[in-house]
Image 1 (cartoon, helix red, strand yellow):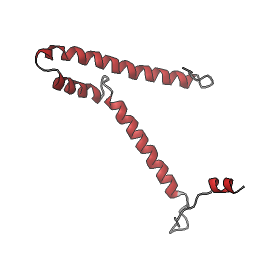
Image 2 (cartoon, helix red, strand yellow):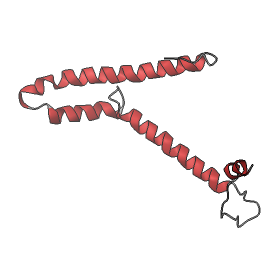
Image 3 (cartoon, one colour):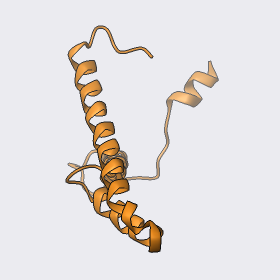
Length: 111
Protein backbone atom coordinates (compact mmCIF):
# COMPACT_ATOMS: atom_id res chain seq x y z
CA UNK A 1 0.00 0.00 0.00
CA UNK A 2 1.72 3.28 -1.08
CA UNK A 3 -0.12 5.39 1.51
CA UNK A 4 1.36 3.30 4.33
CA UNK A 5 4.86 3.71 2.94
CA UNK A 6 4.32 7.46 2.44
CA UNK A 7 3.20 8.00 6.05
CA UNK A 8 5.80 5.77 7.70
CA UNK A 9 9.00 6.99 6.01
CA UNK A 10 10.80 10.25 6.74
CA UNK A 11 13.49 11.67 4.47
CA UNK A 12 16.21 13.99 5.62
CA UNK A 13 19.15 15.79 4.04
CA UNK A 14 21.25 15.10 7.13
CA UNK A 15 24.42 13.19 6.47
CA UNK A 16 26.66 12.68 9.51
CA UNK A 17 30.19 14.02 9.16
CA UNK A 18 31.57 11.35 11.46
CA UNK A 19 30.65 7.67 11.36
CA UNK A 20 30.12 7.42 15.15
CA UNK A 21 27.34 10.06 15.12
CA UNK A 22 23.93 8.40 14.71
CA UNK A 23 21.62 9.65 11.97
CA UNK A 24 18.78 10.42 14.41
CA UNK A 25 20.70 13.13 16.33
CA UNK A 26 18.91 16.15 14.72
CA UNK A 27 15.49 14.67 15.50
CA UNK A 28 16.54 13.94 19.09
CA UNK A 29 17.82 17.51 19.54
CA UNK A 30 14.60 18.88 18.04
CA UNK A 31 12.49 16.78 20.41
CA UNK A 32 14.62 17.84 23.40
CA UNK A 33 14.20 21.53 22.49
CA UNK A 34 10.42 21.06 22.16
CA UNK A 35 10.28 19.45 25.61
CA UNK A 36 12.37 22.23 27.15
CA UNK A 37 10.15 24.92 25.59
CA UNK A 38 6.97 23.18 26.80
CA UNK A 39 8.35 22.74 30.31
CA UNK A 40 9.51 26.36 30.51
CA UNK A 41 6.15 27.62 29.26
CA UNK A 42 4.32 25.54 31.87
CA UNK A 43 6.53 26.87 34.64
CA UNK A 44 5.98 30.44 33.44
CA UNK A 45 2.20 30.00 33.55
CA UNK A 46 2.42 28.43 37.01
CA UNK A 47 4.61 31.28 38.25
CA UNK A 48 2.08 33.94 37.15
CA UNK A 49 -0.73 32.46 39.28
CA UNK A 50 -1.25 34.70 42.33
CA UNK A 51 -0.25 32.10 44.90
CA UNK A 52 1.83 32.31 48.05
CA UNK A 53 5.59 32.29 47.45
CA UNK A 54 5.20 32.69 43.66
CA UNK A 55 5.76 35.83 41.58
CA UNK A 56 2.06 36.14 40.82
CA UNK A 57 1.52 37.33 44.39
CA UNK A 58 3.77 40.33 43.75
CA UNK A 59 2.33 40.93 40.28
CA UNK A 60 -1.21 41.11 41.64
CA UNK A 61 -0.03 43.59 44.28
CA UNK A 62 1.43 45.91 41.63
CA UNK A 63 -1.63 45.57 39.36
CA UNK A 64 -3.96 46.40 42.25
CA UNK A 65 -1.81 49.42 43.17
CA UNK A 66 -2.20 50.68 39.61
CA UNK A 67 -5.94 49.99 39.39
CA UNK A 68 -7.17 50.88 42.87
CA UNK A 69 -6.22 54.48 43.61
CA UNK A 70 -7.87 57.24 45.53
CA UNK A 71 -10.92 56.22 47.53
CA UNK A 72 -10.56 52.55 46.48
CA UNK A 73 -7.04 52.26 47.93
CA UNK A 74 -8.39 50.86 51.19
CA UNK A 75 -9.67 47.76 49.34
CA UNK A 76 -6.27 46.92 47.83
CA UNK A 77 -5.05 44.67 50.63
CA UNK A 78 -8.39 42.86 50.89
CA UNK A 79 -8.46 42.11 47.15
CA UNK A 80 -4.83 41.01 47.25
CA UNK A 81 -5.50 38.58 50.11
CA UNK A 82 -8.63 37.17 48.44
CA UNK A 83 -6.91 36.69 45.06
CA UNK A 84 -3.84 35.14 46.69
CA UNK A 85 -5.98 32.69 48.68
CA UNK A 86 -7.93 31.75 45.53
CA UNK A 87 -4.71 31.24 43.54
CA UNK A 88 -3.16 29.18 46.32
CA UNK A 89 -6.32 27.06 46.49
CA UNK A 90 -6.17 26.54 42.74
CA UNK A 91 -2.54 25.37 42.87
CA UNK A 92 -3.16 23.15 45.92
CA UNK A 93 -6.23 21.52 44.37
CA UNK A 94 -4.32 20.91 41.15
CA UNK A 95 -1.50 19.23 43.07
CA UNK A 96 -3.93 17.13 45.13
CA UNK A 97 -5.88 15.99 42.05
CA UNK A 98 -2.62 15.19 40.26
CA UNK A 99 -1.33 13.10 43.15
CA UNK A 100 -4.68 11.37 43.50
CA UNK A 101 -4.71 10.45 39.82
CA UNK A 102 -1.13 9.15 40.09
CA UNK A 103 -2.06 6.95 43.04
CA UNK A 104 -5.12 5.57 41.26
CA UNK A 105 -3.39 4.73 37.97
CA UNK A 106 -5.84 1.97 37.11
CA UNK A 107 -8.86 4.21 37.69
CA UNK A 108 -8.23 7.76 36.38
CA UNK A 109 -10.49 10.61 37.44
CA UNK A 110 -13.40 11.13 35.00
CA UNK A 111 -15.27 14.44 35.15
